[in-house]
Structures are given as C-alpha cells and as structure tokens.
Length: 238
Length: 355
Image (cartoon, rainbow over all chains, first blue to last red; front, side):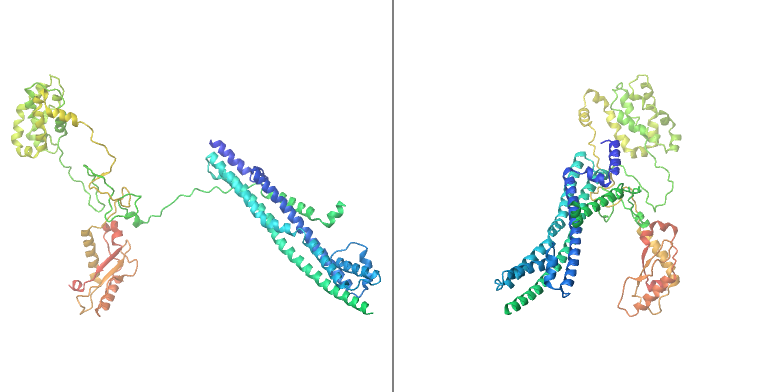
C-alpha cells in the first residue's frame, strides 16, 4: 500500500463519517440489519403513538359514559341513543348487556331464568374483546424491545468481522483503516438501541394502562350486572 | 377512507415523519466528524534522580537486579586492560613508561620470512638484534650518548629483510660495534629476555633453509585464532548485573570513609561533651540524613538502644549536639560520593570525645 493510497483512504474515511456514509459503506448484511431496525423503530413509534391516543380516547370515553350512566338517566333511553352507532369501551359493554336483556324480554319474558348468567357471559366476552383491542400490538413493542439490541449486535459483529477481514487482506492495521469499519458496525448497535429503548419503555407504560382500563371495565361490568340482576329479580317477583 | 384511517391511527404517519426528521437531523449533525487535534507525540521519559545517576553501575541494561559487585559480563579474559581512572582518583600526568623498540619486534617477526641471506651474514645478524633493542629504547636518552653507534645502526636491521645484495654489506657493519653496547648494558640485556629468546630462532635460520620441522609446525599453525564476539574484560564474569555499559558509580573507598568519619567526628567534638559520669560503655549511634551542603535533611535519629539507664540522657545530648553542629563542613572532594554519605552513622563514644 503506497502512502498516497493510504492518505487518500484516510481522507475518504474522514469524508465518509456522515450518517449516510456510515450506512452506505456498510456490508450488505449490515445494511439489511440497519434498514430492518429502522423499520422496526418506525413501526414501534407508530404503535406507541396509536396506542397512546387510543388509551387517551378510551379513558375520556369511559369518564363521559360513567358520568352519563350515573346521572340518573333512564337506561332505556341511554341504550336507544347508543345502539344506533358503533361504540367502544364501557358503552360497548352496556350495549351488549342491554341487547341481551332486551332480547330476553321481547318474547314475553319466557327466557328470564338464566338471564343473569347470560348477561355475565356477554359482559365477560365484551370485556375480553375490549381488552384485546386495547392490548393489540403491544406484543410487537415487547418483541422489538427485546430483539432489537440483539439484531443490532448481530450487525455490529458482522461489520467488525468484515473489518478484520479487510485488515487481514490489506495487512494494514492503522487506525484510519480500521476506524470506519468499526464505526459503521457500531452504528448498527446504535440503531438497535435507538429502536429498543423507546419500545421497552412504551411497552411497560402501555401495559400498565391496559391493565388499568381492564380493571375499570371489570368493575363497571360487575356493577352493571348487579343492577341488571336486581331488575330481573324485581320483574320476576312482580 | 384513507383520511379517516389517518385520523384514527395517525401512528405510522407521525412515526414516519418523526424518523425522517431525526434522520435529517442526524445527517446534518453527523455530516462531518471533528478530527482530533494534532497532538504532539508523547515521548516516554524516565525520571532519573541525581542520586540514581550517581549510582549507575556497570552491567547490562536488560538485567533485573544489581549484583553484589556490579560488573559487566565478561566471557573471556582480555589481554589488554582498559584502565579507567576512578572518579575519585587524583589524576596527574606521569612520565610515560619506557616501551620497547618496535623495530626489534618487527625484526623478530619478519626475520624468518625473508629468503636466507648469504650464510655468513645470518649468524652475525642474529647477534645484532639483541643489542639494538636495548639501545633503541626511547627513554634511554643517556644511553643514546653511550651508544651512538647502535642508534645509527637502527636502520640497518630492517634492510636485511630485503634480499637486496647491496644492503647486505651494511648489515655487516653494525656487527663489530655490537659488542660494545653489550658490555655496557649487560644488565639490561639480561633483563630484556624476550628479545634474546626470540632472536634465537633466527640463529637457526641456516638449518631452516634446508629442512626445519618447525617450519611445518608453523605452517600448520598459521591460522587465525578463532574469532569470537564474546566480551572480554579483566576478569571472567558470567553473571550479568543491572547497569549501563559505561556506568561507573563512585563509591567511597574505605580509606575515604574513615577520613570523612574523622572530619564529621571532629566537628561533633566541638559541639558535644558527654554528660559527666557517663558510662563509657554507652555508645549511641546517631544516623544523620545530610544534604549535599552538609546540612541536615531530617532530624537525626538513634540507631541503637540500650538498657542502660544513662543511655537516654547520653543519647539525647548526642542528638542535640548533632543538631547544633548541623551544617557539617564536608570537603569538596567528597561531593562526588554524596550518595554514600547522605545517610551517615556516627558512633558517639563518650570516651573518645572526652579525650
């Protein structure tokens, strides 16, 4: 390796330390890893944004519904106003239970014996559906959070491997020759961490939010089923 | 439809835009790496204190420890000895010792080689070399007066080597004169055994020409001595010692140490009078740490101890005396050996100081 070449290489190395240079010089496998991690990062942030908005919306709706529900308004009226449009959260539970109630009394009250159990079942199913809706894609966050560092590490190991192979080939161990390869290899780990850290944090936070919402739904379902079973008993007795 | 999806789940759009922004920011921020400032190449420096430098001993730099008697490794004894003056030794010019004339040696070495001159001449030649070496001595200027003739004959011995016939007569000339110096310097001739011995073979030159078994031996032996890269020195020494090639640490010779001890004690005597009635067996030994200028570097300390009840008082007075005497006058010539006397033990013998 003649000195001019080395100097040129060093200059090139200095020129190519930009983010784009780091990416473009990398080995094909490392490029794939980087692109994959970038995609994972975009996806995880999309999920984070969506879920955060969803939870905010859900919480607001629950608050509003509880307010309306406990305001003393007739349940029939409430049901009529809600049944016409798609609902979610507590309203969905309410609508599902009321629909079951209505159906049971439509035929002259013949199917009242196990109505309370049926309503419980319906409420359970609705809760499950709602929680599933809330928790969907959270697993993706968990996966990204735990796997990204390893994927990034894989890219780094691969990059350093190629670095060392080129060292062996060029028989030149000067830092200027080694550094770009190491830098681009470490860049893969950096992206991996960049994707993983928010994913892990968001997963924990969103998981807690989902658990809280589930608890709230279950609480409402219990209260509502209690009200309905009292109504059933009163009607049967009457 | 697409718009409604975007409004309900804006995650991908927001995330995509955010990542694009981060990427752009990264491209701008990482567009160029700030090169390191050119830094001066660091030069490894070993700090060698003055005393370290003084205590450089002779040896091999790669060795781990200093031997008891630091000496360089010597594989063979050398014939020549490099005389190095010790730092402490007085140096003055001395008359050069007389050396033997080289001509005589040259003669002896070259004599056998030349083809034999006419038979009559050799026996005579054999005789002349003996007297010549002695008279030729550079130092013997007086002798020159006595032996003007041999001095003149000096050139003569050389010509015989050349087979020129013209010069041979000249060789014959010195012959008659030789006997005279011999008589005068008989004693010297006897001393100079070597020249006498060596000419002997030249006497036997005659037979050589015909057949000389020695000739064969010489031929067989005429090989260069085996060369070796082994280091030579005065004494053979196979254990290496830590040091440098040319280090030659100054060491206070025992005699000088005595002198210095005497100087210090003399000065102490002016400051110390042992307490009256002190047990003469009580001899405190005081250790002084001295600066090169003779002042105390640290408080003097007691080295020994004794069960004698009087010891304490004697020792204390001795320590006080050392402090009082403090800047000791150390003669200039001992400066070189500062490493040896910077820690100096003085035995304060009351009986000595009383006297």
